[in-house]
Length: 107
Image 1 (tube, rainbow, N blue to C red):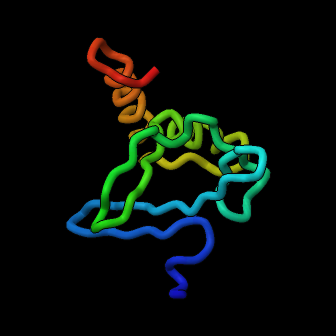
Image 2 (image 1 turned 120 degrees about the vertical axis):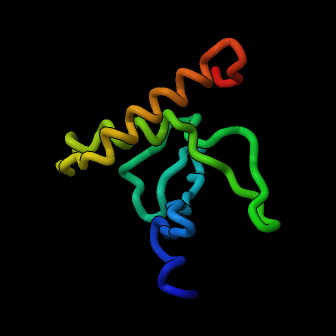
Image 3 (image 1 turned 135 degrees about the vertical axis):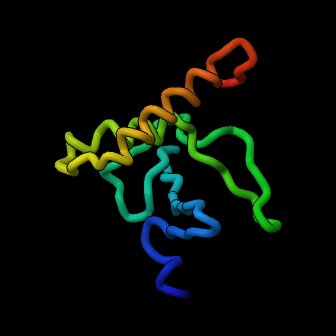
C-alpha cells in the first residue's frame, strides 16, 4: 500500500481544490473514530446520512458540524489556530445555517 493511503488521512490537490480522505473506524460500541485515535470520538452524526459516488466508490461526507467542532477544539488540544481555520469556521457556520434554513434537511 502506498504511504499516502496509510494512517488517518490522505490529502490531495487538483485545480486549486483541496480534498482530504479520512480513514475512520466504527468501533464495537458504535462510536466513530479516526483510525488509531480512540481518544477522539466523533459526534454520532459526524457523517451525513447519504453517500456519494466518487469514480465508482461509495463515500460518506463529513457533517459540517463535525468539521466546525474540529476547528473549535484546536486551542483546547494545544494546536494554534491558523488564519485559514478562522475563514473555514465562517464558511462552516454559513453552511450549517443554510442546512437549518426553511429548505434545509439537516436536523
